[in-house]
Length: 192
Length: 192
DNA sequence: GGATTTTTGTGACGATGATCACAAAGTGTA
DNA sequence: TACACTTTGTGATCATCGTCACAAAAATCC
Image (cartoon, rainbow over all chains, first blue to last red; front, side):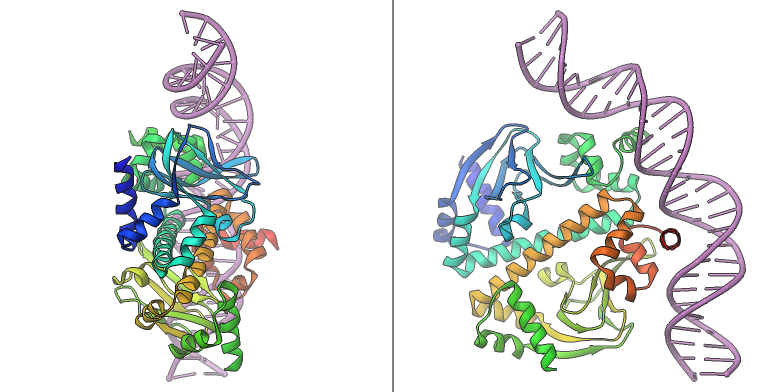
């Protein structure tokens, strides 16, 4: 548990340094939570109740489009798992976040997070910097998608996110990089 | 010019309401700037000096990948044109932002923006909310890319960003949605 | 307004990916 | 262990896309 707390602290500090006092406040609103494989953190039609800082396991965010599950994000250790649109707007979400393996982490309730934002500029800044980072990452990913062909997209994953390839069913990865399941299966064969 | 100021005010208020005093401060650090078609707001190798709030015209953000210009964002009226990675890190950028038509807007210097962030939680909140919005949009775009085939991607643009299709060379749009220039040309022919 | 540059269209071709159907392998569970 | 369910692999076929080459059209610039 101490390890988990340290991971949270280190991760937050990468974005913005909180005082010990502030970190304690952050910890106060973080409750340890476990999800068994296949359990949902968020389901289509539900409100988004907050963010899970992942300390163990892996989750996937997907959307149902034309009866297909399109995975668009994965969250592993030290990631903040949530769906930003429903978190920011407080409308119900049309996306799902599911535990791909047994998962643990700190759950930060949306309502309490908003209170934290009100308390000090430090938390706002933390939020802003985290979002800057996420936006930059998402932009990079988009560029990768539009500029590379399927095989090179898979190589990109191999190089930049090898941990995903180990732990995530190939069919999910296929939707993530925008290719058919069968095609990715053949790409893997060619490359081995 | 008053119109431009009102547009800025309205746009900012969509994310977070500033007091009149705060908005004046924001205006104080915003300087009117014009860019002729083909002028650069940011060039590969340069530092990112700030954000252009666009009041007229259109800009494109592209990256050179394997000798190809891949456009990954467009900014039109009431958008905040910048490249987030270099804005946040203050490393030089590997991307370019160029005026696609004659463009005008308010330029917000990065250094002065950072000072604003220090002054009041209100500006931090504005930044955070804007970033939440942008991240959500970017995520939606990524989903669109991975889940739709080329023709449907173009239809998506037609429906959601018709203003882009009017003003932007087809070859740029093609890279934006990840298809070859010739293919998009044929898609347009099929659809007409 | 004519020449140059840039952008767009198009034909032909080969390569690649999507799809359907089914088999095989793997996983979880009673 | 046996059974069901999920995931992955594979073959065959068809449709689509990318690429190269060149022509046409449009925009830009003296």
